[in-house]
Amino acid sequence: MKILILGSGAREYSIALALKQSPKKTELFFAPGNAAMQKLGTNLNLKDINVIASYAKAKEFDLCIVGGESFLAQGVVDLFRQNNIPIFGPTKAAAMLEISKSFMKSFLKKHKIKTAKFLNTSDLQKAKAFIKTLTPPIVIKADGLCAGKGVIIAQSYEEAFKASEDMLSGKSFGDAGKLIVIEEFLDGFELSVFAVCDGTDFVLLPVAQDHKKLKDNDQGPNTGGMGAYAPSTLADENLLRRIQRDIIIPTLNGMKADDNEFNGVLFAGIMVVNNKPFVLEYNVRFGDPECEVLMPLLDDPLELILACVEKRLKHTQIKIKDEFAVGVVCASKNYPYSSSEKTPIHIKEIPENTHISYAGVSLENEQLFADGGRVLVCVGLGKSIQEARNKAYELCENVEFEGKQYRKDIAFQVLK
Image 1 (cartoon, one colour):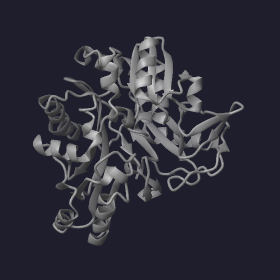
Image 2 (cartoon, helix red, strand yellow; image 1 turned 90 degrees about the vertical axis):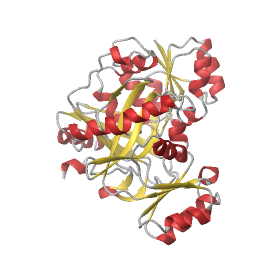
Image 3 (cartoon, one colour; image 1 turned 60 degrees about the vertical axis):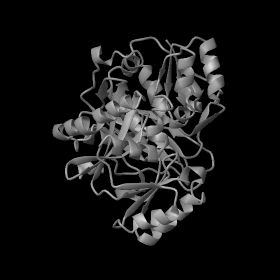
């Protein structure tokens, strides 16, 4: 099978690595890809979705897998379907669940799905009036896509007023913040729940937990994610049943009723408060770094993806391994504040039951360089979370590049 993967991060790398283990013979292509992906397939220096679709049609690709949200927001799925090229991901209309936070919140309200009390507004005076009805901390979100950075948790009314003003004026996040969502703060624990859907049926993947803060004990600024683990033992059977019944099923039914049938990955960011699940946000693709710990737990991810594209999920047996995975992000020196100088990466050895998923890297004279941002993810597997975590950190110690920073407490929530 000739498969095209859209994206260039560790998420797309981990998908490619998993597809390489498939019983089906695969030839992989990436647009645009990263330097390390060249060992897994062919990088195409293409970013424009019209050019990508034309190329995929001319080269007769069998499947396209969309990694990141920016491609979905541009309507790449609609374009590929018009060209009769099989593609895994939601249409632009269905992707509005992630593209617009105000759309998502209005959808939840319409379909009576539990979420925090909120207001969507572009009016600063209305924003301030609503803020006064809440008790700090107060959550202020930019409506549009901000690469995971458009959320402010204000600790006081003054901070909430300022965050709202900065967003609405375009100072903080440009056009993405000219409509904002103001929410009450929910105090509980977060879970990342992934439902892989074919429009009608779905399969729940092992529940993951992400670590957004830069430093140990959830200190420091928010990042794109510093590590993850799966499955989380915080999600028992009762809670999972409630999430399916009260959130996933009503969401898929609601999308269908609104004529936006959902096909692809529905990623629900859930806050559990007193054992009740609330939707914080939806993403419409695999999370990063959650994808890096989910892929190794699936027996055959390619079969799962094909079953969704071909709408035969109900009749497909999906096997999930009886293992745990922990992923630790190694980031560059100045992340997330500013860019970092390029520096060579040296790997001493890859211990058993570990692997690396690469992201921010470049290649010069066969030498891989850390090229800024989140550089790579060290993934460990084991029969317990502790064992998987030990393996992940053993691998971290075998990776060297100048300025390397990583959290030392991934999975601390379940290993306290």
